[in-house]
Image (cartoon, rainbow, N blue to C red):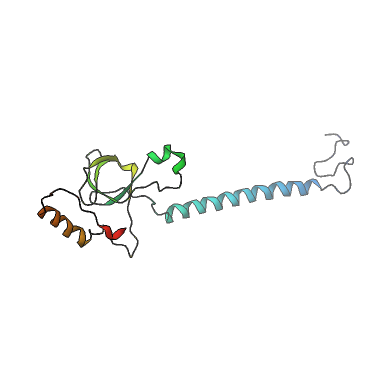
Length: 163
């Protein structure tokens, strides 16, 4: 090695006086690598903590659960964007053997059951003070009996107390 070649530890003469020394630049690179390793380790620790403390958001519905059914017709109609995407609670009567579909009917069993994919269902969680399904008002039962006695069996009675 010739004497004219600058040593790697010496400052070259053509650099300005306020330029940091090569040792300072090497120290900066070492610190940058240490910071990168520390931040990667912190992210890894956080991911482990999240996985350990993560609670399942969705649980698959089982037979006998009250479920909400997704209303897909609202997705196609842009004018109804503020209406709820999930219908009223219904009863999941049976989960089929394939485990991905099930028979869903009205809570009271008045409407025929329909087959839905379990991904289109969400388990209904009532509020603490809410009791669902609400029983029909006593006046409706009395009106149904009266309509049957009057000779109009099968005729639906209407409870006007709601109006």
